[in-house]
Image (cartoon, rainbow, N blue to C red; front, side, top):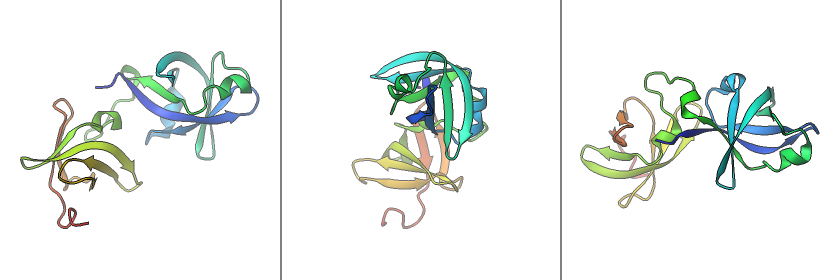
Length: 169
C-alpha cells in the first residue's frame, strides 16, 4: 500500500500572500479543515509543510503553507500534488476504500481475471472502476454492492459479478 495519499492538486496561486488553489481529490472536502501537515510532491520528491490556513472558494480549497509567503513562491507549486501520510488519514467507514489502494487491484468474475483497476471515476452517484486487461481493453464497472462482491486490499483482489450486457457495450 502507498504510504502517502493524494488529497488534492495545486492548480494555481490565489492572491499575493502565497495561497494556493487546490482541486480536492477526496470525497470529504471537510478533511482539509483538520490538516496540520501536508507533503507536496514536486519533481518526484516529497517535502513536508505545516498548514497555516485553509478556506474554501467556489470549487477550490485555498491552502496557505508555512514558508510560502509570496505569489511567486506559490507559483512554483503549480500542478504539484498535496499528500498526507497514511497514518494521518481520516478513518474509513466499512466498505470505504482509498482510491490509491484500489489502483492496481486485480478484478475477477468467478475465476476469470478481467484485468486491473487503472482508475476510479467519481461520478457523484457511485464510483466507477476502470479495468484494463488483455481480453477486454477497458471495462467500466460500477462500484455497487450487487456488482462488487468482495474487495480484498491485502491480497489486491476484487470479486465482481458483471451486469448483463456490460461486456457488449
